[in-house]
Length: 500
Image 1 (cartoon, helix red, strand yellow):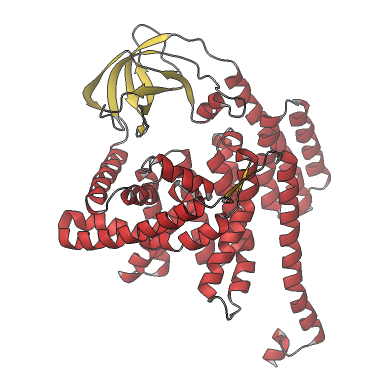
Image 2 (cartoon, rainbow, N blue to C red):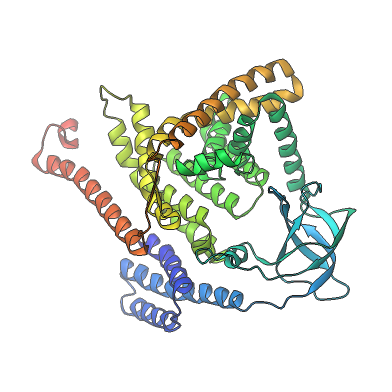
């Protein structure tokens, strides 16, 4: 509890600093926390409360400072010089978005933040390319009232956008050489998957393996959105867990010990994060997937919760804007929290055999339900819509994801060494992917698949989570109560009776 108070106190301070302008909060919390720490120094809980209050003040100061820096728009000007492509370009319908970092600007000052350049689709730009470019820098403008596009880009440390007037790719190469190698491997795997799995199923396969919905058609993207299934093609902790599980089982099959296999899984997570772009979403997914993996294999959910709160505090300390402007951050962390909190309850429910559902399907159902309950208020608040068939879609589709990822990966790998076997794996992968897309399309076409909700405000989010946490606490207390009574009364099911 003390650790949770400390780490979540910092996150709370950041939330207050982003949402309200109350400078006295930082000083008041710091002074109050320091006072409590001095007065009750020997009481562990008092120490935790005191440090949490101190970190509320520090979190507020950190978030408020960052927000104030970005609230002052920089001046617009034209910059000419050398720039490095710092992230893999994202190909859109009419252009590709390329994140640039200017390193040499002979005629003007180089921008201190990154620049988002819109280049023609046909340009073959890759991570690490160095280009000589002339860019008219523009401050990002907000198109609608509901979405702060400028602060969304600020979260990625992007301060300007530009449509380059002229550019030329140089022979030099920047960036990290190891990252470049991994990204080239990813590109080769994508081409092999396209060769052995037909489109549009290959687009879903690439989305599962490498993250992103850019491989999907607009119709498919809309179907995924209506059924609440967009998360399966996002760079999420679930994808990372599947990849880590595959590496773990492979290591065990090769004769490694459990602890050694866990290190192999961690290495697999690192490679996967680099392969999908090494952005904030990928790092977040790596952290969340790693936490779920460590908690499940250690058998101690409390360790997972402690690491979860630490991960939240660490990521927000590097980038406080994630808390408000990164929807993926909110969804991924809350889904992971739901699974970690409900894991003991899920295991106890799934262990009770029933005539209508096998234990494995029960576990999938309850895990999916736990994650859905924790992310639904965020989805309804942001999109003002309720994906009514989301739970059904997840239950029908999620079990097929690991199998689809496995056969897609095998088809890509064997495409380099043995084409006939790659064709077989590609055919199996195509059938699984086709099943997933057909289920999602059928559910999306139902009239009630997505229900519009125009009045789901922030207070409803707080009430939802308040009821949710209260319910979980009640169920956990209720689950422990019979054990305590049985030990006190000396019932045959107690530990003492069994020893006797």
